[in-house]
Amino acid sequence: SAVISQKPSRDICQRGTSLTIQCQVDSQVTMMFWYRQQPGQSLTLIATANQGSEATYESGFVIDKFPISRPNLTFSTLTVSNMSPEDSSIYLCSVPKGDTQYFGPGTRLTVL
Amino acid sequence: RKEVEQDPGPFNVPEGATVAFNCTYSNSASQSFFWYRQDCRKEPKLLMSVYSSGNEDGRFTAQLNRASQYISLLIRDSKLSDSATYLCVVSRGGTSYGKLTFGQGTILTVHP
Image (cartoon, rainbow over all chains, first blue to last red; front, side, top):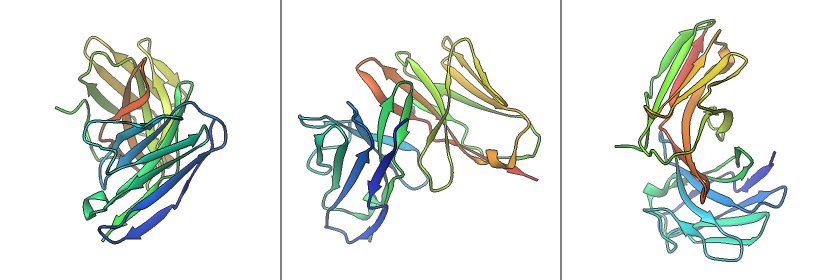
């Protein structure tokens, strides 16, 4: 299994500001992912956080809006830049291990 | 058309009932299939993987029909604790290992 923690667990931010979310895994993992869950919606993959290289973004997501760092095999950050109310979501990091994908507890972001 | 489609429900059933959820997926390249469970304000957690041969875990039975691109989950003898959102999830595997596509979820409420 994998134990994943995220910081902060929740935040309320003003539009135009940026928030960096941290994800820590209790073991080294090759792959880490960032997902978004908008209110009343299911999860959507934002990007793959690659260790030692730039993140790989899914269609509809760009590096300028969601810069990602992956300095080592247990840690990643996702920044939500220049926030607007539409960015209000839960942001979750995840790691696959075998057939199972483990998710962090999520960061609940509200943008006013 | 969404890549993974589920009946959003909600399903309201009495304890002891049998309930079935259906899901269809559009990408024939999908290789791995799962049911996840998400409790209110919690992260998704793997309920079970789904195989072509069908698989059973206690009161839960999952089936996959690749020809019809159809996945199902059957819950027998429902318990109050089964109340949650059930997410149908597919993955293309291979180079897309760890990249999951989620259905919108089916809400289940089991009442006394």
